[in-house]
Length: 217
Image (cartoon, rainbow, N blue to C red; front, side, top):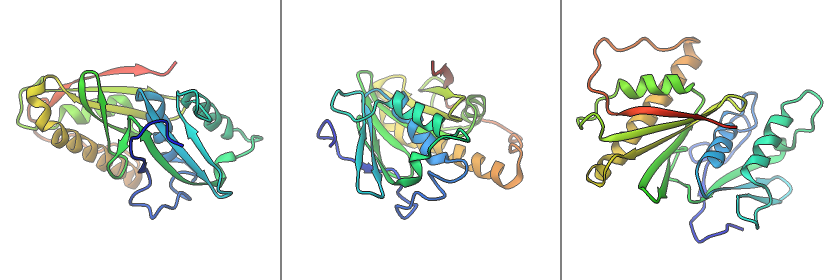
């Protein structure tokens, strides 16, 4: 059961609640992204549903079945050629705790510093920085702050966007969604053509503060 009263959101919205080919396919992109988010966002929780009906809660709370670090370790271990694939039985994943998925992996969170928006991508942090610097949102350069947490072993990057001051909070959703959409487009371009998309001919003012990068230890 969730450890607080926050609603649990379906992390697989838009995929007909079917994990096969999305979270447990060859690259397991969605599952890897959710693992990175659970590991990066303070207070985030996941609920894993198996074909057997078993439900496991991933949380840093003592009542959780697994910690985010343990889930990450299990995901990495399952990639081994002789390892048992416990994720093959996974049928659904829900986000909870401090992390609320509002659709398609775009998440709302609240910290002591105020509202935040989170998502994860399979792009490298340098690619996220390049995309962020090319977006024009019509606000002052330092209006938004972007932070990235890269997990090279899992192969995903968690991205956080937050306003630099309360006066820019009304623009947070619009700016964060624009960055999220641009990252999705870049992922699709690379899947289709196997290379990074060409840079735009003209770039507007930098929409968010240069992403600050951290790596998992």
